[in-house]
Length: 110
Image (cartoon, rainbow, N blue to C red; front, side, top):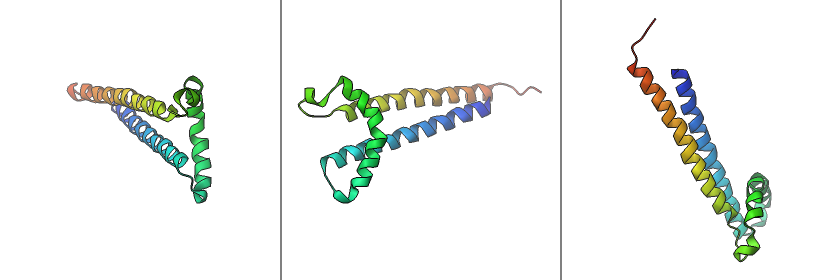
């Protein structure tokens, strides 16, 4: 069970890092959408392709034209990612800690 608990802890850490990296990718896309730098066009295209599959479904429910032209889909995705990070990663970490605590309080049996 200790291996399983360590696996859960490692998975939680990896999910946390991936979610944070994706949040930074969305943030960079938003910043690059405000300022146009021709030399960063390729970066903008890459960020667009990385984030559009997540942002497009949100825009279907909250279109920018209903918000005065302001696209709030990145903010909604940020909130969803923060929720997933706190709920999923937190739950995995706590579950792994509980397993480890149970293992340390049980006597060894052969």
